[in-house]
Image (tube, rainbow, N blue to C red; front, side, top):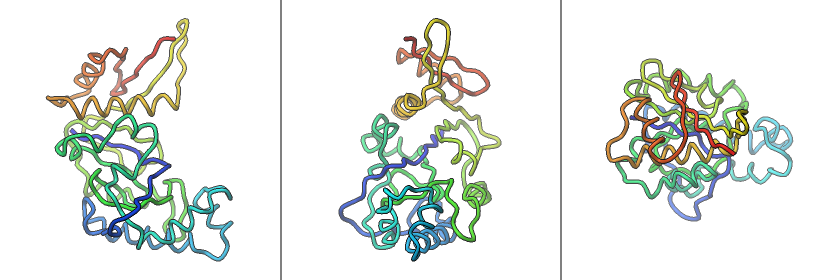
Amino acid sequence: MLVLLPPSEGKTAPSAGAPVDLAALVHPELEAKRERVLAALVKVSGAARPARALAALGLSPGQAGELARNVALREAPAAPAAEVYTGVLYERLQLPSLAPAARERVLIASALWGVVRPDDRIPAYRLSMAARLPRLGPLAAYWRPALRSVLPDAGLVLDLRSGPYAAAWSPRAAEVVTVRAFTEHAGRRSAVSHMVKATRGDIARLVLSATTPPHDAAGVADLVAASGREVELADETLDVIQRV
């Protein structure tokens, strides 16, 4: 079983530690691709016209400090990705507290690194899959062939990524389960974007903490239902419903 996570927009910058070693990240075959994105990101972030850099990265003027962080990426302290990525999903998942064997079943999507394991050491950075870096084109298309060649495509994949990151690689042969979250009142359902992040974090923790990991979509649904949540499974999409 493989659990695919999105990165978080917000990140906790490590205060100490050696800088990132691209060759030490999972799937070192991606090193050349990572180096090219890293070089492009450092260059555009240090451009003489910050307004153009902010536009290329999809940042606001109030986020100009992210440019300085990106410029220093090669020398910045690195820490386990499980500690760098933050946000609602990661707060609920609590990756660092999971057993090492459970963390080995996780891959985190990244516009900069392609994918990383929770224990891979990375610095805090700012780059979304929607950014446009010079001479690289759309980042999802840039990463797609390389990810297709190295990522496992068998068994069960619990895919908790958002759309832009899913566009970089989608399993073809594996059984894929995605998760949505809804509130329901008087028979009417509404999707809640903030709630879905928390729900996905909870489900990822349930699955990764299970004594016997599920082997198919029905097993994921049974595990989530046993936790007291109302679920519906259809076409490999697990809907979690909260009645209000």
